[in-house]
Structure formats: C-alpha cells, structure tokens
Amino acid sequence: MQRLGVIGGTGLIDMTLGDELKAHGLALTQRDQVVVETPYGEVPLTCIELTHGEVKKELIFLQRHHNDGEASKPPHMIEHRANMKALADAGCEAIMAVCSVGAIPQDFPPGKVALANQYLDFTGHASTFHDDAAVFTSVTDPFDSTLNATLESVLRTTQGFDANERMHYTYWLAQGPHFETKAEIDAIDTLGGHMVGMTMPREVKLARELNLPYAAVCISSNWAAGREPGDASQDLDHHSVSAQANQRLAPVWACMLGLLV
Image (cartoon, rainbow, N blue to C red; front, side):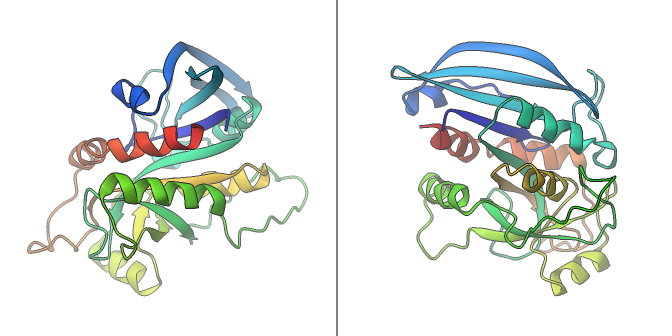
C-alpha cells in the first residue's frame, strides 16, 4: 500500500513516530500540515512521507476530535462527513481507525488491542452522504476482511497471542458524551455488544459509501461501567481512560506500518 489514512482519537492523539520506523525499514522524509476544504467543513491533516528502500509511502493522519486548536470536539459534535471526505480526497487507499473502547467481556481486559468485525448502532442518528436521494449501502460485513487479516497477524505477534486468543469483537455505538450506566452495559452485553465507544461506526458507514476499505484497531482502555473486577461501582474518568489507551500504542504503530510495507 502506498497511501494509508489513519484516524486517531482518544487512543491516538498525534503521530510522534520515532524508532518504530527503523524497525520496519522506513525512514521519514517529509512531514506537512495541510487543511482540506470539504463541503462539510475544513479538516486538518498531517501528511507524512516515508521511504521504504526506494519506494515512497505516505501516512495521512486525521485527529477525529480536531477543533480549530481548542479542546477536543465532543463526540456527538464531530462532522464525520467532512473527515471522511477529506481522507478520500487525499487519495487514501484504505483507512485504519484507532479507537479507545470500554470492554465488557473478561477476555478483553484493559491494555489488550483487538479488532472490530461488527458494530451495533441503535442511536437513530444518520451518517450518510446521501441526504437528497435514497441510496442504500450494504454493510453486512462493514470492515475490510483483507485489512483485518493483516492486522490480526500483526496484533497476535506484537502481543504474544496464540491462535486461540480472541481478536474480533462487536462495537456498540453509544451516543455520548456521557459514559454508560451499569444497566445499559448489561443490556448491551445481552444484545451482543463487546465494547462501547462513541464514534467509529459513523466513520465506517461513510467509508462504505465511498468504497474505501476501513479497519478499526480497538484499544481496551477500561472496563465498561459495572464491569471493574472487585468494584462494580467504580466511576469512569476520561483522563484516566485516555492515559491507558495511549500507553498501548506499540501494537498500533506496528499495525499501521505493517499495512504500508
């Protein structure tokens, strides 16, 4: 792959690549900040040019919570159409999103990095480019199977997981910006959700409309509400969630660079 789009959020704040490049035989040759104009608003992108031998590669980084230099835009206010259109217009061949999630099942403890293979979205909020004419897009399998196969191999290797370790989970889209109640998590569990977050499915729906392959690398940053072992009443805190997610970036770097080489 020559040009990969990477979306970061709570789990990947910026692109501070260093020694990770050398480990994959890559060298940084150029880094630019650009602003892309779309019909839905302006989007800042970080364009990183790399070389792999004699071959040029590019990472196009988007921070989904960008907010004109102010504090992060809350999840329910993100203009996902602008973000996805900007990545498509930048010529990205595929998108790798990085997500910080609250985990429900015991086999997805904080610190584990895995993949989304389905989502559940009962928020009732549309995420589409087609407001004027009816266009019905298939999302039977929303995430790209080829990307997920490559990423699964990387994640197993970097985390020392054997073939029996579960690597695919279903993402439940919560409206936000509030975290969930214990009762909501119990209901989500019953309905088949394994992890909760506030953004990602809205991106993958738009990616499907753009025929843009998309994969979601999900960092378990905390136990979901009521699932903390030994303390079912523990409150959730955004800053501690973000800190945990950003301590688990080594497998994430390996994923994005593994897709390029």
